[in-house]
Length: 100
Image (cartoon, rainbow, N blue to C red; front, top):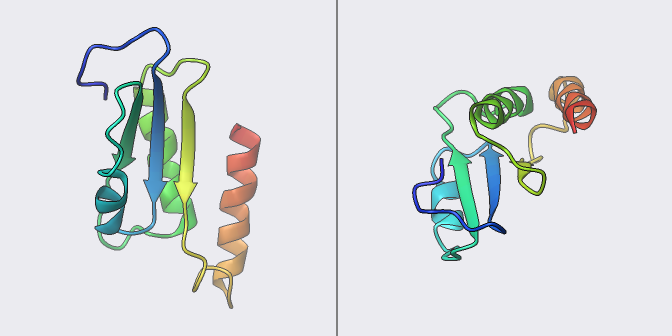
């Protein structure tokens, strides 16, 4: 995931999002040599919190993480915290907290 030579103090951020297109636009703005942001792709139809968590954990497992690297989930809660979606949203957050 790191395409350029790394420095001793560089950091990797693995970011999982529930949006298909916007994350690349948001994170493309970061042009820092010591911070690498890898946005995990979001295929259409896999935007639930649980699907995002599964993708970001899979990407983290494949990466060679160091102690100061971080894993992030970026979620839009407009629909996820209403009705029947709240249970799966909360379950994903609980599992993410357990994995931290």
